[in-house]
Length: 147
Image (cartoon, rainbow, N blue to C red; front, side, top):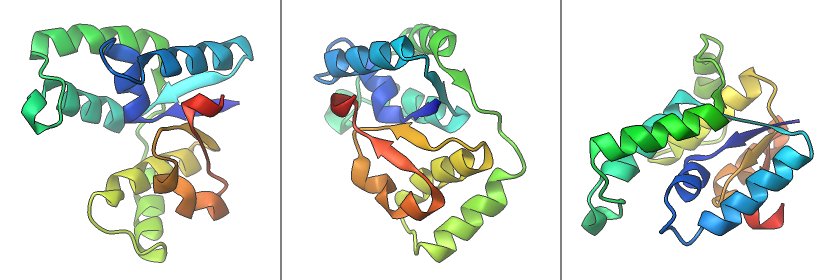
């Protein structure tokens, strides 16, 4: 089975100082041990860059672009990308209208759209509630602590 790695999981995997680091490491190793494929999207990597380079006083990790580039290279080795495809946009458009999505939640809707377009049913995320609205689309949000 394919699991999409949410941005908060990628951040937890890459930043040892993050409280989520050991939880993510354990979850990822368990999933790999059970032959699950772990993927992500270009959007997740862009969000990772955003938070990693954002100053700590603005809820970021305060890393330099050079440091973040090194972290991202490591993540790219472990988590291959779902392809960006033209099928994602119309699905996203349908989701935001039909699920009354607004504000920052549009980013999660785009991840959900990518999952639907690529027949991915599971997302590993610390933000379970952000994806619960998409259960009718076959999306299952899994907390890394529950793996």
